[in-house]
Amino acid sequence: TQLLEQSPQFLSIQEGENLTVYCNSSSVFSSLQWYRQEPGEGPVLLVTVVTGGEVKKLKRLTFQFGDARKDSSLHITAAQPGDTGLYLCAGADAGNNRKLIWGLGTSLAVNP
Amino acid sequence: DARVTQTPRHKVTEMGQEVTMRCQPILGHNTVFWYRQTMMQGLELLAYFRNRAPLDDSGMPKDRFSAEMPDATLATLKIQPSEPRDSAVYFCASGSVGGPILYGYTFGSGTRLTVV
Image (cartoon, rainbow over the protein chains, first blue to last red):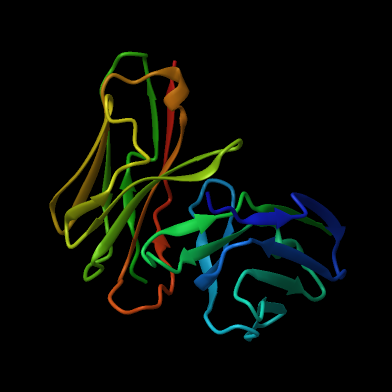
């Protein structure tokens, strides 16, 4: 069974701090997505990474795909209360790229 | 902005009753998914359709759940009879899949189901 492990599970920080969350697997993915989910809403796609070693930036968020396409990280610089939410990573099965393998998420709380 | 529309947003029902959840995917998207989200299990894939044809419903309890896509603008998920363990948030998501790379999906706001 393919699994995506996300760490940490919970994170509570003060506004202005930096943080990194991780998404790890033993499986190779053809692509990997990061989503953010706010209470009462569905996940919203933040970014898709495709190439091993790829780095993408979205304002204060930096996403990296591992060289072997098995893991990824999300780094947030100078976190703000608006960054609060559940961050989910999802990998596209290299053998069936329509199906996503989901992590359980990192719940982030940024306190003012 | 194009969005995936789910109805109802909330549903409270008694055990044994039939529940139908509806989803309007984004026009032009050829793939539609139904997911269930709980705190313990996270997002679980129940079923998905490509070009309205069911491709995989292996994640769905067959004896009580059914998913259909009667036309390109409507996907339905039905539970009959409902049980308390079905209480969860059910999401519909749609996307365009054609090439070798999956770029991600657009999710609806979900239906929060409570079975008492």
